[in-house]
Amino acid sequence: MSKTDKSKDLIESGQVEEVAANGLLHRRAFLKTGAIVASGTTILSATAAPPEVDIWSTTAGRPPEAYGNRSEFESDVIRDAFTPTISVGAGASRTPHGSLEGIITPSALHFERHHNGIPNIDPDQHRLLIHGLVDQPLVFDLESLSRYPLVSRIQFLECSGNSRSLDADQPVAGSAQTIHGLLSCSEWTGVPLSILLDEAGIQTEGKWILAEGADSSLMTRSVPMSKVMDDAIIALYQNGERLRPGNGYPMRLFLPGWEGNASVKWLRRIKVTEGPTMTRDETSKYTDLQPDGTAQIFSFQMGVKSIITSPSGEQSMRGPGLYQISGLAWTGAGRISRVEVSADGGRTWGEAELTEPALPKALTRFRMPWRWNGGPALIQSRAYDETGAVQPTRTSLLSERGKQYNYHNHAIQTWQVSSTREVSNAYA
Ligand SMILES: Nc1nc2c(c(=O)[nH]1)N[C@H]1C(S)=C(S)[C@@H](COP(=O)(O)O)O[C@H]1N2
Ligand SMILES: [Mo]
Image (tube, rainbow, N blue to C red; front, side, top):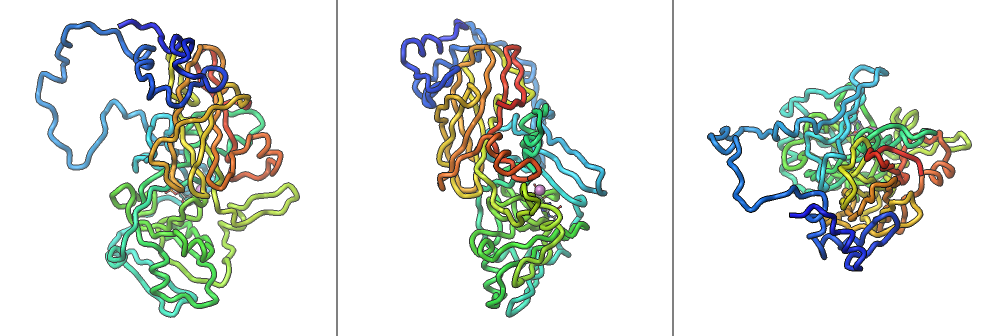
């Protein structure tokens, strides 16, 4: 087969429409003319003869595995764990978004953030206490909790410190993992917290809860009752199996669309209170410092945001030709309604294809065909949500709220594609 790039002919003949400058093609170009991919750089030359027998086809393979492992050839797709020295056991590990596709983060690659390490909890001894302003305090073990009706939802979790490095004056070197890796998406299965609180009987003054974890940092956060009654769950399962230890085994609070910190892991206590408890993690930390020196507290909901995961930072392009720009969009407000992509640093935009399923408070995958001409390009994505909110530029976000803000950076981010084929973080 010829290795010439037919995509150029298809564009020139008008069969494939260019929707924005610097090679962005109509999002349905792949559907209409799947052949243009094959005609580009992706297919190796073939002959008509049947293939030779590969070495792995000549002997019997390995027996089945009790607990599955991935291919040894994928072993470099890993989280990057880092452990700041500020306190014992504090640390985080980030999801390698540049190597993943679809919307579900494999549990073994879900980001982790813990303030004092991962406790080794014996599920048979762990208890969850519900008390405070309730008619009847209740205590649950894992088994008794599992008897309640379970719900399953695919939803993202994002640390409010994710993408913080975009606050820096100069673009930091980094990848989709190191810049945006405190973000993951799982199917979470658990018991709606509203059911448990109804059973305990909330007294009329009970307007907030305090949630406490069983790790030695005793992470505690206050959550308003409206959120609790809306869609909070006590999550027991993650992608079909019990939660991973790093993600809260055997149970965690899960607050869809809200900053990760409030989804207290290793949950051991819920106290119904009149107002917020004003704990360390909602006063000295996880507040947003305003330009006038005051701090905004309880800024729970994550803003509308998107990132391009392929091509992305620290990757390199194979050569000029047809590519599929792929990325993720999400919003704490509900559904993503639209994603646009630019290849000229935000001057012109084309609409990307949203891949089903596009679920509320979940990562939504978007794709856009792009014919890279081998020259410099600044690629960006911009998300809109169903409330009409639009992802801001970095300049407008930082000028609006100042640089001291520290959390919730949901600005448009730019990958620079150089004519030497490298992809790097840039400011447009
Ligand atoms: N008990 C407890 N809950 C916790 C934390 C913690 O250190 N201890 N870290 C919080 C933070 S800052 C985030 S971003 C999320 C991360 O959840 P994950 O580790 O499952 O990704 O958990 C939150 N819940
Ligand atoms: Mo976090």
